[in-house]
Length: 111
Image (cartoon, rainbow, N blue to C red; front, side, top):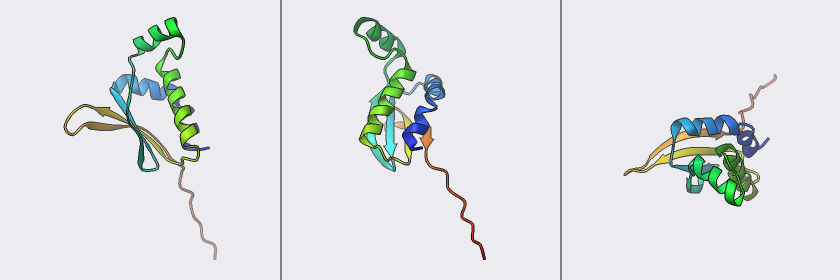
């Protein structure tokens, strides 16, 4: 399982966490490099209204899943992905939302 699959498996709790945190933007870091500096998090009401008129996603869960799938297409082999909430300021406030990385395997030595 790559990092994207791990995040996509938890899209509902991630969306709930975003609702609690309310960051205006998300930063996506792939294996230590910023892949998306400030992804604007649209208000849920705007998503619903847009979906009613023009179609498209109507919830943060669907929006987040769509964005994760697009980023996975650009970085398919990513083993570590971080989602960071970003708020305006000088310097900007940055807080972790989620991190997906492989678990370290225990190394055993046999005599």
